[in-house]
Length: 439
Image (cartoon, rainbow, N blue to C red; front, side, top):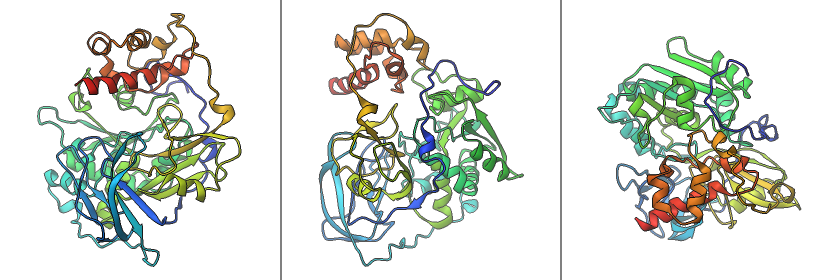
């Protein structure tokens, strides 16, 4: 590991990627019903364009973006719209969702879409084509990609950083993208570079994926100014700010975007899907998702249509083991526990992790002993100890003005190292929720 680029602080949780890293992705069967929430991205929820009884084909636009920071939603399977109603969402809320009865007799071929050659599209128009396809960041944040590709004019981007770190334990979907779709990744890089009006890119990959590094290096086009950069294995190396710090040795100012320091970060799976838009006309309707953990009988990497319900995924993967105790969307550090088998798979879901009883035993919360381990772990150099005390005292506004709560990316490093088992990250999630309610 000596000599590899990285950032200061962070933690080293067990990786547990060996469960699925070597399993090639396989296509998931279409379920009987698809449920597509209108809110699958950061920003304003989409506006429905269909109603009960409407026939839709795979790839059809069924909800349009409701603003610049919004994203279109497409039918992920052919069928008939059953209803538009409130439905359980992975966030824990009930949100408006489009229910589609999937046609069992359909070939599920995508309706043909006329898409121009990206080489013929002006730089300023490329982001519009990407917006039409409903592309969002697949690294977890689900930020509409066309917004990233339109940085402020006074903040020109110098370097495109393609994020292949996948630092979250257990997850291997990005790993499989690099192994199985390297040509699409490089084609997506060409498109994004043109949209940004720049010529240079760096692909950051953690050193625990030597096969991905080898594949990306072997398939690297000679006419493309792109570097495959191995990085130190450390969590959260895949966080936007941490990747920028490691590769460019620049820090994103508090409250600013990466474009403020000349960087733009795009997830490797997002980049591959950008290429797919122009290669086949397919909008973002599915992705590789890691189903993993010791609580699932058939772990693997599956290409799953969005809107597939959790219960259908669990059933296809052999069901839960007898000692399964918790299902998490995402990884153990930043994932969200689920309480309903009817929640659908969304664009932001890169993994489904099933933990056993032994892996999620509750531990007693003890008083803070002022050991400072959370300060040494925080990659943003915040003071989690102080923020935790403020949260428990409900001093939410002071957490922003005096402790920079808004800079916290909820990575969970502080909770992971706390010897007193104080759920610091969960306290900060609650504090941000309370601040939104106050606002």
